[in-house]
Image (cartoon, rainbow, N blue to C red; front, side, top):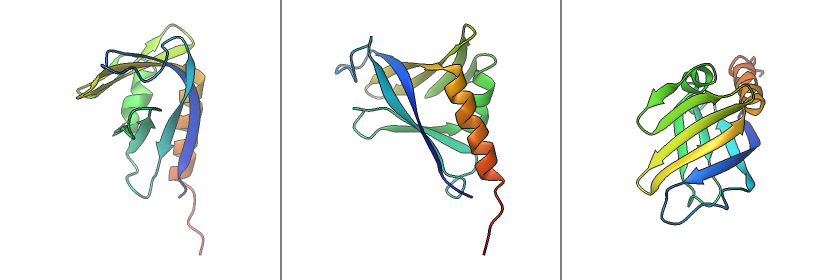
Length: 121
């Protein structure tokens, strides 16, 4: 099984005291899946968040692309036909990250492929 890491362009809106970026600017967000560490979790890291990474169930991301899903630190919902929103909560505030839906679908497909790769010796 191999680690899947993908960069996706996103727009971030935050209520944090110190903004992560200019809200109109598209920035690279890191999506990561490590089936050896935990095959259920995906991770999202935002630039400028002091290394802050949110880990949550991969099913939440998949479900949130079809209908609103989640509670607590991470919520995901579709936004029209081509966008998806990931809402991330931390002690510093709330960040709303708008992705192209296709980028998240591509990442999910790659995670399912990585999770079933045969082990070679």
